[in-house]
Structures are given as C-alpha cells and as structure tokens.
Amino acid sequence: MENETKTNVLNNFLGEYEPVELRKNITELDKIFVEDIQDIKDVIYDFTVEGSDEVKKIKRYIFRIKSEEYIIPVSVMNGLKELSSVGLLKQFKVLKKGTGQATRYSVIPLEFIQQE
Image (cartoon, rainbow, N blue to C red):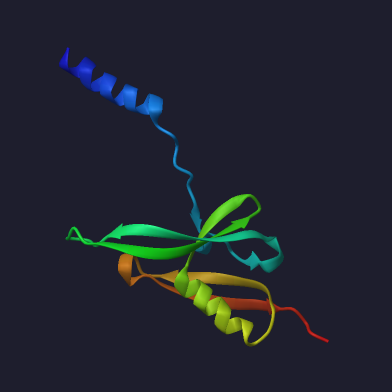
C-alpha cells in the first residue's frame, strides 16, 4: 500500500506537470549564419551559488535559429559587440572552454559582409 501511495504522488504530479521548454547552448552549432537568427530575447535566471543558499541573478540571451532556441551567455554578446566594430558579421562560431563558473566562451568570426 505504501508503494502505491508513492506511485500516486508521482502520477498526480505528472498529471499537472507542464514540460519545460529545453534550450540548447549556442556552442552546439558548428557555425551561425547571422541571417538565420529569427529572434533575440533577454532573460534573467536565478542561480544558486554552489555550497550556499545565496541566489544570484544571471542574464542570458536567447537566439531563435530555425525554430530552435539557443542560450547565449552575456560574454558571447560582448564578443559579438566587439566584432561589430570591425564590420558586419555574416557568420561566426562560439567555442566553449571549461565547466560551471569557470566556463569561458570565445566568439570566432568566420565571415564578414563585404562593404562597398
């Protein structure tokens, strides 16, 4: 009877559960064509600091590319802003190094739009 109650708790929860929309990381793409970016939005996440109860707010951006949503860290947006001073990007890629709070991202320009 006890196992049945536990099963009912999960089944009742799942009956009301709304699936979370999963997003991919921009580094999963080999290259990003600027013209494929359909939408950009910014979101704020609550982040609990490992080993404490401290909650911090983290800003991220979401690019919608071909109906998929990709998480864009602020450091990537900063890198894209720096590259915009060089010229208009046509395509780029993002490299990821490290994990957790030690994660670092690099924006690599692959092609600029030729200006006349």
